[in-house]
Length: 419
Length: 199
View 1 (spheres, rainbow over the protein chains, first blue to last red):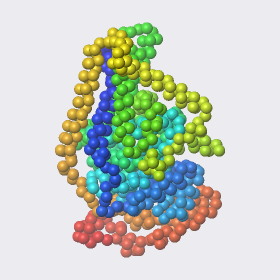
View 2 (cartoon, one colour):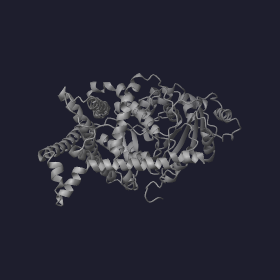
View 3 (cartoon, chains in turn yellow, cyan):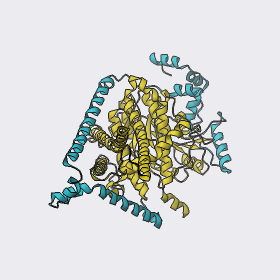
View 4 (cartoon, rainbow over the protein chains, first blue to last red):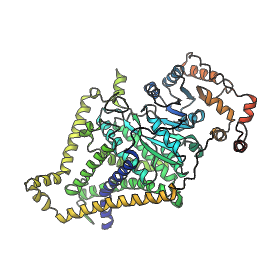
């Protein structure tokens, strides 16, 4: 028993440290092999038609801005399909007006709100391009992003999807600044590392490109999943389609700036991850699915770590409350002395490695150093808070409609609404 | 073009919209976290002080732990880093050897229309027609007059007349001959393609 408890304690302390090392190692290898020399998108002999799909639900406040940015995209042949998914605001009218103004803008109107996956499936059906770029209605696409993604599909027939690099657009509050650090370093580094050790866990729903043929082979997006992006990624990878990460293809996104908004978003992500693990547990029976094993194991371990953390907190609180220190005495959870220093140094190194890898895409990051230096703690704390709730929700949740409500997009919008 | 951002997209950072209470929470929380940070880094600070001749380090660190403990931890971290690199590299090389040189998937020059038609159980001609329309309501009620479908739906939604739909892609409608060709089963289509007689 004492050995087990000691192992639990070591696991809680060393697992984040170990994963930081793995992410850094993978991130640096990816950068060295695939990123450091590429400054311009590779030139292609021909540029196939792309259909940019923007599903929208009650996005009247953003959709015009998003589409206007898409009109600036530097790519020879593309169309923009905006899908109104049963909005109750003026989204449909704005889309209709923009269709009148621009030939490349097309509109699809869902008679009822059926969720993002259903909207994407409809847009896929009516799209002319054999390659699709899906993005969120509140995101702004970098003008070069399509060129950065297109070459993967043209040069490598096995590539089924390419995910881009989301950057945080709104940075007013502390929570937003923390997420700025998180997206710029941890999330990008994880995707790079996953590409090195096998497969990526998920494309980013906010910016991902797909080969339509690949989507057809996996029967498109699942309409009953919490996170359609994670689900489609795993379906593609199980069919041996390559899913890549292209850090140069950036999209600027709005993140939640309230605790409730952030918690709900991360809970949904965690639930989506668990749903995928439950659905694809049989990959362990198939040797030819082995490249998915590391990413499966990583997610499983992260979830287990969250439970181990709570167990340790529970034991520590129990010992402190009742003054019982058998069979082992635990120190308070925040480790002082060298263990604490090692953790703090790991955070620092992670931050600076991330900063170097991402310096080409976001030169303002050092400005936020004061606010985000300790953000890796928050990353793990959010994991601790959401994972134990996500597991029962994924197992027992029978409400699989997959419909959506508009998330929190920052306090600057609330301030604007009050004016 | 914003020089600090290669995309030329303006970052939204408007501190003036923050309430006083939010500002206080943000600054206090950050201050507390910095204090904790410095507390965690205390041994390193001590080490620096010791390096410049202040022997507080010895009392704070060496007296409570031992040099052997520190060396053991550094050694474990070093081995962990090496192991991570080696495992990742071997795993990558093995998979490249197994997959990378045997890329069996070849580029196809074929439209997905037939696959979509089969999946959605509708004639390929209807999919083609939808792909040519600028605006579509889904599901479609009036397949023969989709433009009126859109106008009716938008008017029903907004309660007022909408701008008439522009003439849609020259009123694309497949001829009877095209309809027949487009409805050919997939295997016939593939055979025609092989014979170099693509429609």
